[in-house]
Length: 139
Image 1: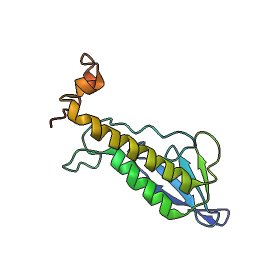
Image 2: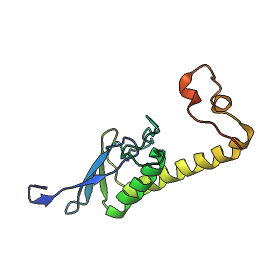
Image 3: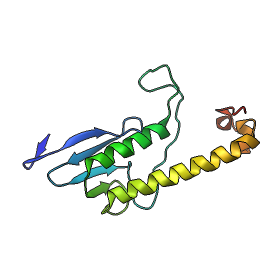
Image 4: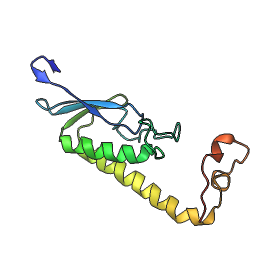
């Protein structure tokens, strides 16, 4: 779409939400990042259902979508991000690097501790809460 002589492109960025989008303006080198890239905090990435939103025969993985969306937004090369919360992103590539590093570090920690747990209730610590019984880890 065009606004004020500038082109704005809708970029599909699932992860935080299944239907999340960013809006990118190449002429101004800016993107409205919504909740996809935030300053100082990571967006909430959670599983609302294990059914794939596109009805694929695979379990939905919003964290994987988030990683792919971060790489997609990095390739846009914008220099100013306008998030839905917090201040302007004056180093979007640096924010993306921090988000990827943070989540990769957390995943590595989880992989180290998983062999010590048999069920999600053990990991969660609250077996009486139904939401903690979503997954079973068998090693």
